Amino acid sequence: MGTVFASAVAVAGTLLGVWVSHVLQRRSSHESEDRARAERRRAELVDACSGFAEAVMQLRRAQHARWVGRRRAGEEPVLAEPREEAYRLRATAWHAYFRLKLLCGDEGLLAKATSAVEAAAGMHEARDDAELRSRGETAKRLLDDFVTAAAALLR
Image 1 (cartoon, rainbow, N blue to C red):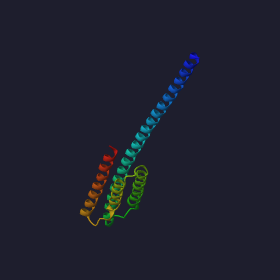
Image 2 (tube, helix red, strand yellow):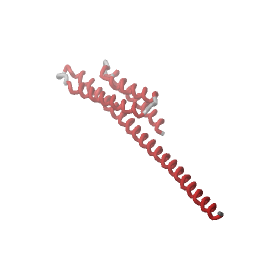
Image 3 (tube, rainbow, N blue to C red):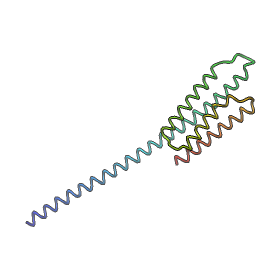
Image 4 (cartoon, rainbow, N blue to C red):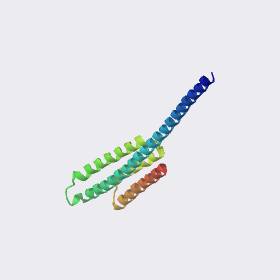
């Protein structure tokens, strides 16, 4: 009888050890997966923020070229290419914004992103050189505000 009891205790102890080991390994595996998922998400967000900033800077440049092209209209025929390029880059900037919105739920960061795109998109409406420079600096400052807020979020 003692041998049967000792065998039963040994089997129960082995089963309990296997079960505890399984639970601990499963928990460890889930934690590793969660960390890997969070790191991938962070990397995607960094990529989205960087892509957005690049798109807004390209839009800013194109709007400046569009404005300059319109001002030279008296000297030569106005080309549609700068306008079309600005339209294309504005669409690219909004595409980058929507990608950012899918990855980030921070309303403050998204508001800064919206302001940066709108400021860059409106540069071509400047009435003179001084206003163009002012609008360009405003767009650049708003984009810098976005990047600063994104950097704080990603730390």
